[in-house]
Amino acid sequence: MAKGSRQGSPRSGRKFLGGGVRSPRNSESDALRDESVATPPELRQNQGTRFKKAPQGNKQHARNEARRYNVHACLIFSLFVFACMMSIPPQWAGMRSPIILVPGLGGSQLEARLVNKSKARSFFCHAGTRDWFALWLNLEPFVTPGRFECWRDNARLEWDFESHVARSPSGVEVRVSRFNSTESVERVDANAARLDWLSKWDLPSDIDEVLSWFNPLKDVVERLVQELGYSRGQDIFAAPYDFRKSPEANPEWKRDTKRLIEDASAMNGGRPVTIICHSLGGLYTLHLLHSMEEKWLAKYVLRLVLVSVPLGGSARALAMVLSGDDFDIPLLSPLEMRRVQRTFDSPFALLPSTFAWGKNDTLIFTPSRNFSTSDIDELLRLAHVQATFAPASDAKEASDPPCVEESRDETDMGHADPSSEKYSADAMLRHASRVGHLTERLQKKGPPRVPVSCLFSYGVPTPGKYGYGDGERSFDTPLQVDIDDGDGTVSLRSLRLCEDWKRRLKGRLVVSPFENVSHFNMMRDSRVVNSILEQLQQDVTKECSDQSCGDVTGWFSAYWFLYRWRWTQWRHRWGWLPRSALRSIAKKSFDLSIRFFEDASRLLSNPSSWLRQSPPKETGANGDL
Image 1 (tube, one colour):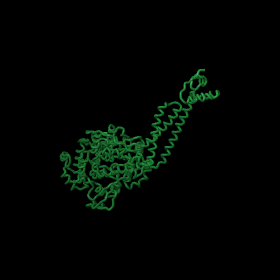
Image 2 (cartoon, rainbow, N blue to C red):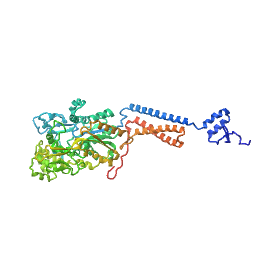
Image 3 (cartoon, rainbow, N blue to C red):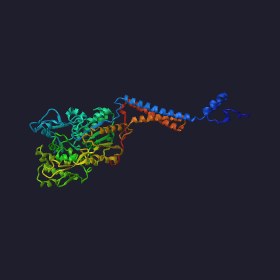
Image 4 (tube, helix red, strand yellow):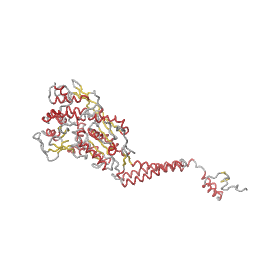
């Protein structure tokens, strides 16, 4: 036999293992050939099976084993995550956003103190007090004979002709009770705790509506504390305000609230805050946010939640100026309240705007003529004429000038009795000329430059038009009220103006309408509170919000790729994945696993670094998003 042609030689590549011809493939096959030379013939048949293709049944068994591993791994990881979440202290799990609550009209406690007041209104009134006492909400003056005049004289505003602002009367100091604390907005009346036992009963809607005045934000605060783990004074605060003043006439609140937002963010590891506001508080907050810079908003504000905010004004606010409003409290008289409400400038900030009502849409109708949004100034001047008992011939003369003359106003208001109709009517004209059309100015500025959740209600009969007669005292009481759709206080056309922000806010706007929930019960209804709590949880758990990103999402991404790496190992073991794809996934999984352990160690060393800030979005030349 020639050299190199020897049968069974490991290098010849000829007859091998039963006479088959195989070309050498790698070092492993060479070693097997060398081993086969010295192997007895009876064992060679068993060794050859390692080169045969695995039967189909073995592949099916492998698939079943892989699926079983997949299910077991998911269950084990779920139990592991649950155990970790239960073992993390509450302060470490604090990736939630701090909350600032801004109440609505009449939703803040006001305290007063009399210091050297010139004279008392009556025998039942005091000219001076050493301590602060409850000014709002305090039902004692409304049920005690002779005490209502005292309350009205202390609660009214008078015009300061030097500073051109409305302020408390001389000798009366008024402050907001416990700014920053939620106690002043959970219970407007300090004595409301005595009525908590009534909440256990199924009360009629009228009585339940009255109770909502005493505890406007109590339910939402308690649920935030009990269900999401918030703590009063640590990550949930309140920004009450003097609701007698309009947002533009209350710079103190703007300054204090800006500082509160910054302090709340600093106390919670630099996380941006979520502002939840109701009714007039929404206009206060919009006025604040529109005056802030883009960088400040991106750093400190995560989301703005608007609940029943009259973005286009309210027809009921116009009726309050004309006829008074008892706030749905049976003990109050609308006409008696009108004298003090006309001295407030906040009702004039809520007058209907042309954004919600057209220029020709009727708001007030009489037998002689109709008044639309463009005729509000003329309507208020006519109401001023009636209040001052001027002759009918002077009505046209009084409606010609845009406002009452400065010198005549100063003389009339300086000598008029503050408790008279003439005094309040003069204040009405002055407030209308300076504060009116606030909602139009806010709408022209566009949406706030932060994510917004807009919640409102519909399906509740709401005053839309008021009908009055012709006469000297025709504006004292409306003769007819036409019903519109809304929440009982604000029309739907005004509440849903936030839907016009979709073009600019896009995905950062969430609109949630609710059916058959009254204006004052919006912050107490379980559906509304559930929606707020769900939005708070979504802002925290989603991968990247508009203002900040959560590192915890990177952890889950890292785990997913680690799990995928283990799964691809099983696939490649049974020949289902190319080797090149395995190397690519292995490299990415390794990088993310390193990030996982780095983030874990950083959290353990510094829990406040749970959220990291992302750079603010660029804006155009005109400030648009």
